[in-house]
Image (cartoon, rainbow, N blue to C red; front, top):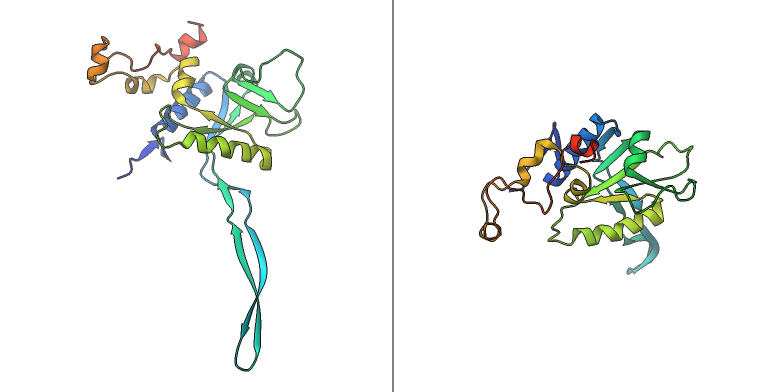
Length: 217
């Protein structure tokens, strides 16, 4: 039976998406994010590829010719997980920008987690799209998304950020509401052999709260 994940009345596909939603809400409280939306409606990336042909049927009294159509390729639809609208303060803190002019040396496009694009007069300039994936990818979903990411950029001019919450929390902060999920309730033998105890962090780092992040700790 598929596990149900719900956050504030919104059904989500994974616990990682819920973790990221918590992070976004704390980012709103700090003035970095204006609003966010969990995306449920897909959009068309590539349309059907169809071809027409004539089918000839020879009957006893006549020859019948029908105009037929077959589908060579089905359409491709995609639904990102989140649409995030940043504040100006949030853009400066978390978003690298491509596609419009900044003073040389002002930013490193690979230095931040989120990527904004466009031109200053575009309404979506402060909007980023996010795909959330777990750190441990057992089914190759990240590899599949990396291909789709290229298709989206090439055919739609749309860049979608790949966010793995554990990496995001390591570099920024971890929402307080979910911290217990990252602590041992029962310690596996391998972890116990390394000195881990109940209540210790499962992570390889000690997470910060948002206040600690704000204070530079």
